[in-house]
Image 1 (spheres, rainbow, N blue to C red):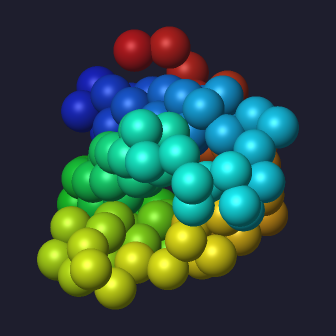
Image 2 (spheres, rainbow, N blue to C red):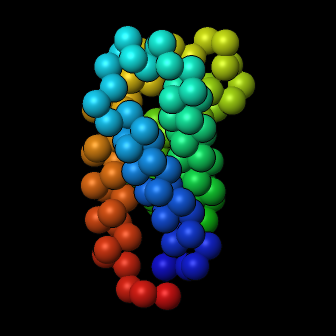
Length: 116
């Protein structure tokens, strides 16, 4: 695996882990009422989406192996370009349902690669 791709996958995994850490024990109401935490989580989702976008550029087949990257990229684009239309419920659902799966899949993808 090229070093560039490894870096992007590690960046994506780190962003997932930080977003999950920031949201641990958080309810939807807590997300909505805490602008600082919401901003920190959204920033990690931006980093996640950008890291996934760059990883796909480095390895287009990644979209087939990790279907969740397309969602991460799309969510990043929505946060960046349509920030006034980002729905907190979508962000919360992503934290609860999508990120745990993506974290496992990214870790598995990285573990399957020989060291650089």
